[in-house]
Image (tube, rainbow, N blue to C red):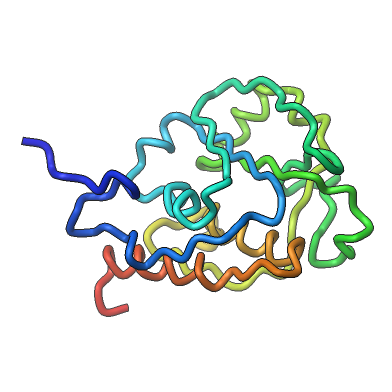
Length: 184
């Protein structure tokens, strides 16, 4: 018999995080292109982002049609690289950021998403260099330290949106981590 899940957060009822969620508006349009294998991963942070940022759009696919231009500015790809603009060293007002596209998956899967969606490579890229240390102890990236999609997006939105508060996102992540590592 399948476990009962919360209809809102889709977590098993004993681990429901809805009571811990403090939704807030997203300061700009955000689309998360999530690799299908990542979408089935129980430790993904994208469902937490969807709870906290209800306007966020999630596309689970290997291929995505380029979205129409945002109302103001243009789409940027949140992805590190030599050509990426470092949001920690550039005044956001100088950039024409109308919306963000974020790739979600392992580094290998996100490279595959870029390969399968070559239009993404034509977008200006945004990265960061001074994000707080990752607190997502459930999964580790290459070298043992990488930020989750939630942490990365929280940092960038904090830089871009003067009224955006990343604390509710960090609180939700801490609650989820505590479910896997009680007492930490």
